[in-house]
Amino acid sequence: MRKVAVMMGAGTSALLVAGALGLALTAAPRASRAAGGAAVKGKVTTTAPASTGAHTITKNPEVCGAPAPKVEEVVVGAGGALANVVVAVAAPTPTPLKTMTVSVDQKGCRYDPHVQASTVGSDLVLKNSDTVLHNVHTFLDGKLTLFNVGMPMKDMTVKKKLKGPGVVSFKCDAGHTWMSAYIVTFNHPYFAVTGADGTFKIDGVPAGTYTASFWHEKLGAKTASVTVPASGEVVSNVSF
Image (cartoon, rainbow, N blue to C red; front, side):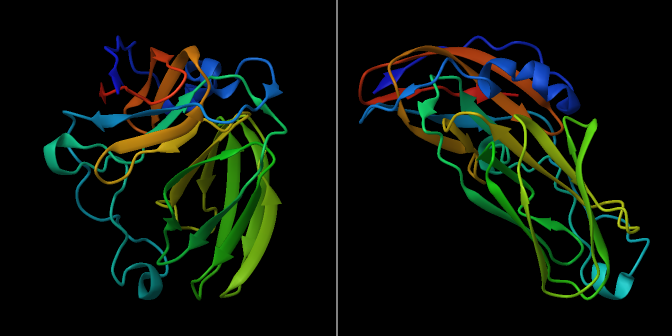
């Protein structure tokens, strides 16, 4: 297992992610995917304080306030472990690029899960598990509206395609202003989202030296150079 020292750049606004993550969103030219490859793994930590408390409920308290959703902007675990960081390595894109199916549920007046990552062109399944009207309004990199869907019925589902690459942000226009979620879309498969313990692992990365990117909705974005061996593992630990 190889460990790499990482020099990190300054953080940037989350909505500038297309520029901050450009090298990781748009990978090297396409190539046939070879078997094997190495794993890029590590842990993301922070010295920033964790978000605390719950959102103030201003509409449908009978559904949204039982209990009120917690603030999820900065989720910090033991030892400063930082959850919900999207990590990507801009390695050559395999042909064909495999798509996925990801889902977002509106439950208790929050989007679940809060942060995801996916490949461009993947299916997105939206669900409303609440008994109140929700509206799913999504933006690409905080600017371009991708779709705007009203979901008035409990257990209603809608399927959409994820475009990009970039950050797809979610908001509810039906009065639930606290609701938010993110899906970062890539034109390559080399990405992961840190868990509650701050760890991540990206398998099958071909050998080479690449730019790795680390994005967080509140703390911004950082990049690093990582040299991936032909097999085994390389460790990249990052602190925000």
